[in-house]
Amino acid sequence: MKKMLCVIILLQACAYKPVVDTSGRSGTFDNTKAVELTNDLQHCKTLAKDNTNTLVEGGKYVYNYYFRPGVLWLSPKANYNYPNMYRSCLKGRGHSVLN
Image (cartoon, rainbow, N blue to C red; front, side, top):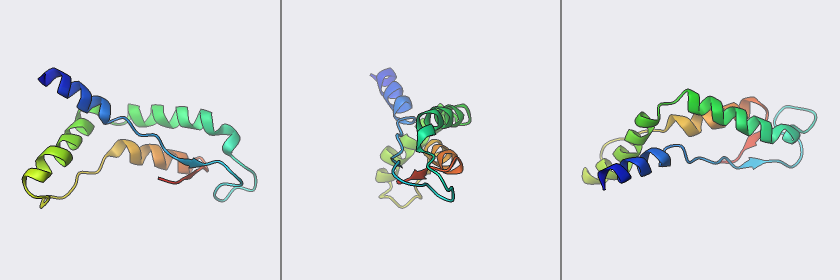
């Protein structure tokens, strides 16, 4: 049971899917960059996975959803690095990320 819980937590840490606005021009570019969206999604996902630790991200998940309610949410929430890195990579490539 404990092993299955650990596997679920580790898989949950990398379950981020950004919502990207693909219509019209994005950001400061004169032409649309949405034609390269699939390629950019794959590159940014790989970069984010390579530069984050799954065990640490899973630990943050456990902390936020199991430890913090135990202390009545008095401790600060741990921020996840994976979605922030993914989002900033897409924004750096000129896409409008909505979430």
